[in-house]
Image (cartoon, rainbow, N blue to C red; front, side, top):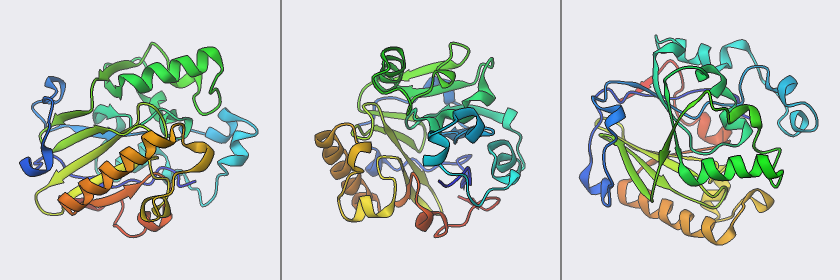
Amino acid sequence: MIHARCWHIDCLEPYSNHAASQGRDHISPDLTPYRRLILFETGGGDNYPEVWGAPLNDIFALVDYEAGHELPAQIKKFGHDIKDVKAVIMGHMHLDHAGGLENFKGTDVPIWIHEKELKHAYYSVATKSDLGVYLPKDLGFDLNWKAIHGPFLEIAPGINLRHSPGHTPGLIIMQVNLKESGTWIFTTDHHHVLENYESDVPQGWLARDHDDWVASHQMIKALQKRTNGKLVFGHCGTTLFKYKVSPHAYT
């Protein structure tokens, strides 16, 4: 498991690439003006091996760890505090991506998530139909949930969210268009590793709907080809060390 190392994508002056943004829905009023610190997903959370317990802490074994990998410490490397975060975008709600939401409980920080993901996560926990990958502690009413509806949302100029079901019903990928470094595509766990993308292979039992996964995968490949976007996958060390990480910033 790659634990909370961060890329700093400087979206203070994003580039609205109209060719890469066809089919837009609307710009969210919550994020305009757009000079904001926006977080994409949150990692497993503080002391997750103890919080999760067995057998999950064995599946997600903690290796190559230091305190500087924690979410608040990573944000400090950019000269910010976690209290500076003005919005969180959740690609999906699995426990290794949503644990850091603990930092935003009881605040007015909006937590953006696709409606299908939020509904599925609550249903999975309440009925125990998919309990384990979703945890009740990450789904509290003390979080400021904001639902995304439909296939596409330009949540701020240059930041596009696309519904990409397959790994989970409500997974969204994030496309960021920057003036200097171009387009970035964060697939979260639609692709865990590079091989899922290059070999057109889903994640076996970790994919909840095979047909949806294939359709979303084809969409992402077409998006990358059209924009020449740089890809960042959910759990890929090859990707992690291909790019510069904190405190470097891409613009």
